[in-house]
Amino acid sequence: MNPFLGSEVQRNLVLASASPRRREILEGLGFEFEVLPADIEENDIPCADHDAFAIGLAVRKAEEIRRARPLATVIAADTIVVCGDSRLGKPADEADAFSMLRSLSGRAHEVITGVALIAPDGRRLAEAERTRVYFRALSEEEVARYVETGEPFGKAGAYAIQGYAAPFVRRIEGCYFNVVGLPVSLLFTMLSKLERTRDDSADR
Picture 1: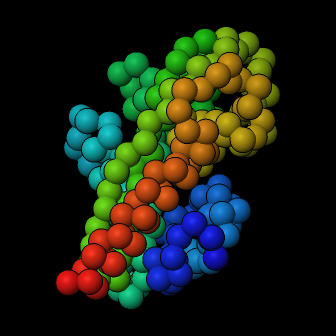
Picture 2: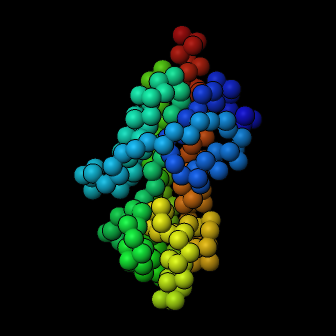
Picture 3: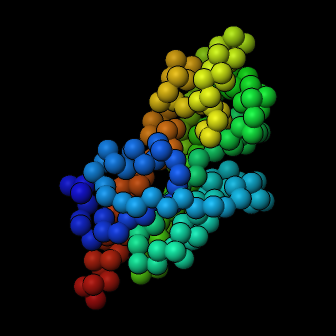
């Protein structure tokens, strides 16, 4: 149980994600929850706005798990990386990982996570968090060695800031946990909103 939120809003939490990083973040915050990954196609939302794209994916994940757990508070998130005009998801193979990492080398990029919550009474919240990440220039050998570790796979932008890619990052502007995959401050703000609106409804 997390000490900064009421017990009601923490009851019957479901994380709609297979990400071990998101699970570890929630566990570290003291939450008790069920993990039930959503199975959606992540690339079929036609949307030019990057925040809306990430939010749209998170909402679809939350809605899918909501059908399976209608009495739960569902937490869903989806993270994308935007570099220049390119939206980077998870690499399909080694060549794709190489290409993504080369494009990030020596440049700044944006990490955007959409977060969606659905409460048992149907109340919904969806917002996005942005963090700017600055990579130093990477050599071809560094990129090759990193891809060989296997860590880039399953990661938006082909890297994990909390893993072997940590030395690639010169600095960040914004929430570190957002880059890992779940913006903690935003999540608390959203859960607090659910808690307040529930209490307001109970008072009327």
